[in-house]
Image (cartoon, rainbow, N blue to C red):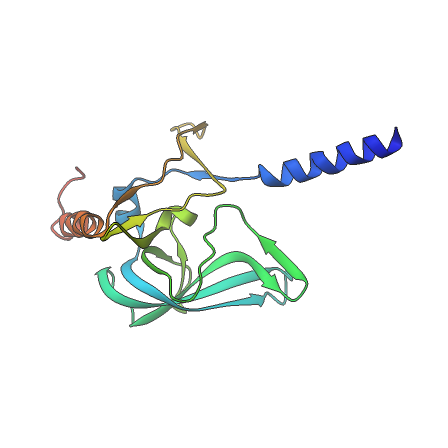
Length: 191
C-alpha cells in the first residue's frame, strides 16, 4: 500500500512538471513590431549561461549577428538575455523561453533591457520567429511551447486565449514588419 502511494505521488509530481506553463500577455505581430526597440533577421552566434552572483540564478545570454535590420540601429552583433539555463549541476528553465543554439536563424523582436546594450525578447517566445526551410520555402514561425497567452482587460483581468503560433513565409513576415515600421516612421495611425 505504501509503495503504491509512493508511486502515485511520484507520478503526480512528474505530471505536474510536464504541464507547467508561463502566462503572458498575447502580442499581435503589430504589437511586437511597434513595442520592440530592435527587429532583425539574424543568426545565433553564441549562447552562454552565467549565474548572477547576487541571486544565484542562471541567465542565458544569446549573441546574434544581424543579416537584415528592420527597426532600430543595432551593431552588427547584439546580445539578449533570458532567465534560466544550466551551469554544472545548477539548472533552471522558464517555460515559454526559446532554447536557442548556435546557427539558429530567426527574426528577433527585442526590447532594450538597460543602457549597456543588453536586450530581451518581447513577449518571451512570441518575440522570435525561427526560420526553417519547408518544401523549398523559407518559413518563419513562433515556438510557443510552455507559453500560455492571455488578453488583459482594462480592469486588469486576464482572459486565456488560443496559443496558436504565427507561421508564414519569411518573405511575407519581413514585408509585413517593414510595412508596420514604415507606418510608424510617418506617424500613420494603427491599422
